[in-house]
Length: 408
Image (cartoon, rainbow, N blue to C red):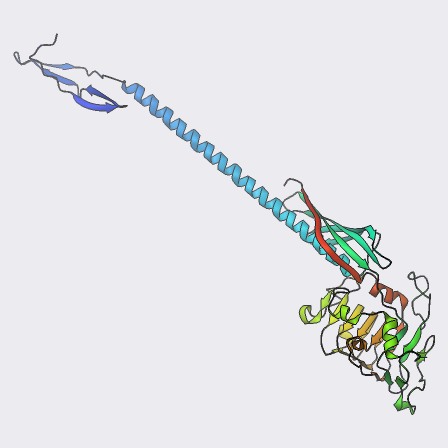
């Protein structure tokens, strides 16, 4: 038993929710009676110091393990997000390639049985059509298929397949002459030629050399050549075909025989133009139009002049008056609402129809063929290429659109 004459100093500490008493320093015990001083080792009532250090180490290791797990999870998520972003970008590029190829195919004005391949900076695409249903004698329902492939610079590929439903209406335009002038025609001088004999080489297309047409078709009393000293209804030089000039039908009969619904062409319900000049500008046949493409170009202007810079092919539609200047060249069909005026040395291989605004109740003016060395020749293959597929319209786009990705 400890003597009452000893005095021991303690400090009180809290440890894990318990109150322990331990000496603050090595204890000095004073004997009250003898004045002797002795040193006593401290005794910890509770957990020893060595146990405290081990617990702290375990706690630090546990914290480091948690931080490592968080870092690993963050890296994995970041890497996954990056790959998802890469796949999405590749998928979208493949879709853009597919859509461009589909528009490109439709812009050619043809629906062919074979598969066509297009190449772009972002990939390649194959396009073909499947016949679904013959709606009537002039309309057929097709499925337009596109499969695009995009190869990413980082590695890996994305495939995109898209399908559209297309209703194709066979062109109902009948070409009866190299030049049809519903409002009549005035010929100045004797230079230039209009020829209805087919200029297409034999076997160059399915209809080549199958039929010759009139050189010029006008209503009765519709032809005048005053500068040659001749009056109305006098045949002039330079008109050849079967016959050279046909004036047996009235203006209304001419319009009906063409089978052209002019209003449906102007409002786009017959076929949507590939280029509308007021919105898209006039296309360049060097940079904008492929060599196998026969576009439809709509010039929505009361009067518009073209020269050699506007030369090209396809179907050229003038809402109002057409003015041909310089060395303008065209392969295909030209449709004019009012009259056309020609000066210079134009060369047109296909067919020209003027005065179609009669379908809207507007009396057209006579065509004015000026003094020049122009040449307008009927060309059955160019007419076929320009009009084939013009009635093709999308009914539904992206009816089926799927993407297949290969891991990056």
